[in-house]
Amino acid sequence: MATLPNPLPRLSALDLGLPPGRLVDETDEGPWHEPLLWVTDEQPAPGAWDALQRTAPGAGLLPVLVEVGGGFGGPDGWELAPGEMSYPGDHDPEEVLAEYWEECAADGDEWPGPAAGRPVDADADPESVASAVVDSLLDGGGPLKDPRLALVPARRSADIPAAIGWTGPANHEGDTARLCSVLRSWEERFGIRVVALGFDQLTLSVAAPPTTLAEAEAVAAEHFAFCPDNLLQGADTTLAAYAEHQLLNQPAWHFWWD
Image (tube, rainbow, N blue to C red; front, side, top):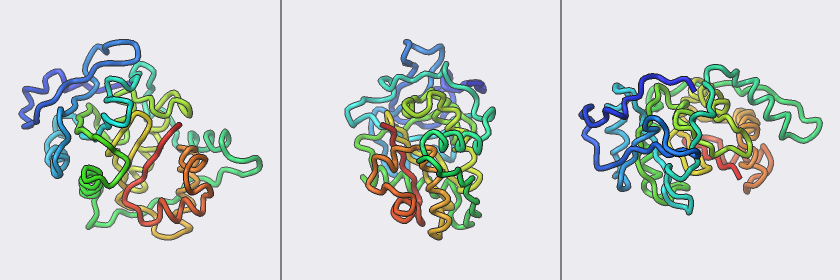
């Protein structure tokens, strides 16, 4: 993946007021030539994300929660593969989703096309919604068992998974940058932010979620293409049920790949 200069090697000089933590450079092939992310030693307190969200982006770093529990360990054991990632901007998100749909949908079901975006409410800007979702996750309101706060060298939230070489969706897509191209599109259409990563899980905050069933079902089709396991192995196995229970007016989207 094409990258900008990495601020992590000079992290101590950036004066971000960070708690104790460590740099991670482990990949599936051994140490990377530079740190991929920085991770706190302890679970952050509510509000820690919001504080970093105000200061770290100016240094070229973005916050994200990472799961260190759940039996897979932290990012040093996730089989990160930064060398296998392309650049998200090189992919057309609609073409990516259409290709996934063709691979996963039942015979005869045509790709319905991308869902229309929604304007972000002035009272619910993406960073504020992200902070609220993160605090909810830290309070046990989500799939994370033992989260840590991390900093990743990235200019936009959608690029975080590819920037660290995350391979959680490997059974669905080997080049995570293709999925990140979709995340970029969701940034623009729904105000999403990447707020948490696990070994094979991804959580997004959503500043402008669908507010009608018709809108939600259109988004559900994209979710099925993006992460078929959400429906194929989830409680809601139809687009209509998934749209109603998982997407309608929901400020967070969760994805899990088998």
